[in-house]
Length: 166
Image (tube, rainbow, N blue to C red; front, side):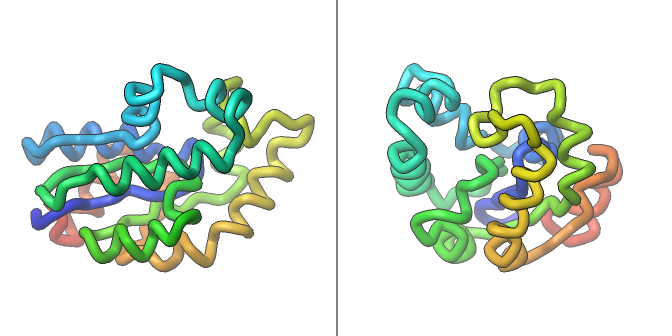
């Protein structure tokens, strides 16, 4: 593997789980941008959204990106990470971007039991997922590779291997 490989996609697409597995198998470091921000701020993502707002959170994501080194590693980004501050373009300059593509229905099945999704605090989360996905699709599709995220971690690892990323 060469350089940084970013895993992007909507919340619930499995970026963190896949990234941890890929890091373990490749022996390379793993970073979850949301976890990094939690450590840096001492606040959870929902706390940041409620106390400082989304604009402040997106600024923290940008600061996280600028703290990255070009060393080989796996990075799972937050769902909106590539969609603000021109970060998708910057990620592609730093490394390789893999988009875990899923439908709103598939995502909703995965995250309906999780209460800490700040952007889904609504009575109709499937509608919000659909709206967010439509809003972000053009940027996500800029990824170097687009793969079906609605597969087991084992199959996703094999797909990443076929792409020559491991």
